[in-house]
Image (cartoon, helix red, strand yellow):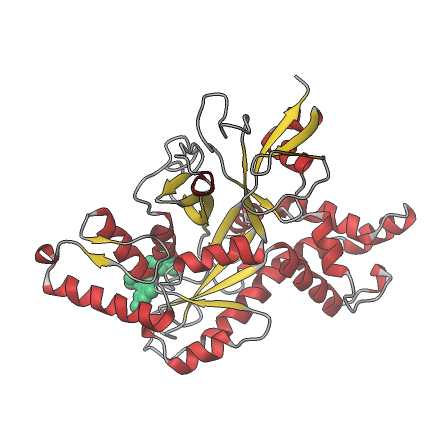
Length: 396
Ligand SMILES: Nc1nc2c(ncn2[C@@H]2O[C@H](COP(=O)(O)OP(=O)(O)O)[C@@H](O)[C@H]2O)c(=O)[nH]1
Ligand SMILES: [Mg+2]
């Protein structure tokens, strides 16, 4: 599960990335905490089940901070897109490669309007950020269109000859982008294009590409630099049709996490306030900056960074957290760790799906599962709920 951060230059992508991936403690076992400069780990929050059971947990793939389970999510700082990159002017293949890994995208925009179409600095209020939203949606759709329309007539005719649905033919084209056949079916469902794909014109192709983008790479908009944006712009962004917009101050989040790490303030990620711990160590400039951050939080509820990530994971991708354990009585794994792992899985995941997610062997040899909260046996097709603690019983 990876989230890609996209946007034109100078909007605050790297700041957003640094802020969201800066954690007080890192999980050593996590494979790529430091492998690539543009990849990192952010955390989404859930109440830790250990509190319900009245025991202490010893997490392995996640962290527990005072009853809040912090579950890792991979973040990708996607190289800056320049206008018309899809035509081959920009960082084409690198962009596609990054795009293929992302399940959802966080589009960082400059809500202050202080950067032009290419990302050059201009006086605040000059650029309408709504244009950047429309540009990006179109840009990604054009990438997809470019891929599917290459030799399309031949493919569509071949598909017809073989009695293959056009969705399947499109999927063969788009697997490289990490797009599933189900997403393509859902995208084309009720889309107003001719039944016969051989009759698709240029506009139909664009509509198809747009719909596939919407389904396969859903976008959350981080209206960044909201601290320097007018109320009017924020209002206009927040009320855009069919878009999820969250005002953010990536700079604020980064400052708070750094100050927390340095022991100057106490700040839990995503919260609506912070506490100054060592006022005597703060310069006047730092005090002023913290004051401005608190003002921002009072205006918007929080810095928005954590909310954007959690909206992508829980709102858009509709994932929930479940906790597989080997022993349903002690809630432990083989090594005796209590509630070791949290898995983010789609709503609708059943007991056997979870077994397969944990390990193919576990799925193949599935016998039954046990709900550790109720100690009841559940069948393979039992749909799991958010927060479930599950023991899978399999043939040895
Ligand atoms: N006012 C304001 N400035 C920000 C914010 N986030 C980032 N910036 C500034 O915007 C500039 C570009 O940020 P950067 O993260 O390098 O942008 P990128 O090119 O999109 O990766 C830097 O000077 C940041 O300090 C924010 O929330 N508010
Ligand atoms: Mg950058």
